[in-house]
Amino acid sequence: MLSNYLKIALRNLRKQSIYSLINILGLSLGLASCILIYLFVRHEMSYDKHHENANRIFRVASDIHFGGNHMNIAVVPAPMAETLINDYPEVQAAMRFRDRGSFLVKKAGTIQNYKETQIVYADNAIFDVFTLPLKFGESRTALQNPSDLIISESIARKYYPDPSLPGGYENPIGKSLILDNRDTYQIGGVFEDMPETSHFRFEIIISMTALDESREGIWLNSNFNTYILLKDESAASALESKFPAMIKKYMGPQLLEYIGKDFDSF
View 1 (cartoon, one colour):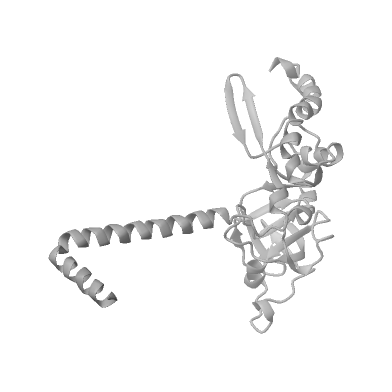
View 2 (view 1 turned 90 degrees about the vertical axis):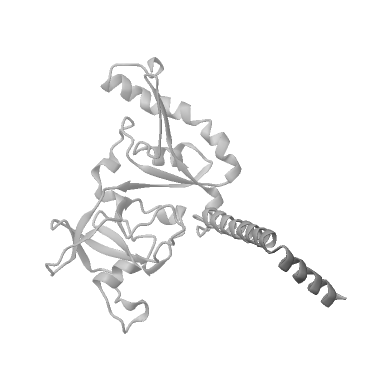
């Protein structure tokens, strides 16, 4: 019975070859489109899922209304991270990134410089908020001092290659890198290369304590990417509703001091 159906189907295909070809091509294109859309959506939805507490991590952004203008930017004032930790029990941990562009980097004792572009300053609390496994070093102290930095495995293989060792590089803990032929930093850790499905990908992370402006209590400048880990993800909306009062409390006095205007006048 099945063979008869197949024969009839093939006979009809031959009789109406053009019509059949159009149908087959249309079906093929439809299936291919569905597969591509599925793969694209799956890839996009996989971003940052490698973090153990991904559902409780939030980025703090600035929604600014000033003089009839509206801006939404992904940076906030330097003191906000510490304020969120101290004033809001919903927040379990907070950390900051500060992108400073590219640096010339070389090993101590060598003259060869390499231009590295994926470099940021970060608080040691990066390990409290994000899942950033270290192959060498201790997360508790890796970025504790102003002279500390951590590097990716790719950077370790580039500057300290040793094909005979696991990972293809020697243990660089305690060794020094010189940035822009001026500042010497000690390697405090080696982290696994960040996956492609991460919305940030860094190769070298310098201790935030090396950046003077990170310790300033200025609320009128927004230069720091700030991330928080909530104790409960359901608290996000309630916490966000408290932000205007926080901004008024801490930014208001500085507006009056530096600009001579009250917060409510804006």
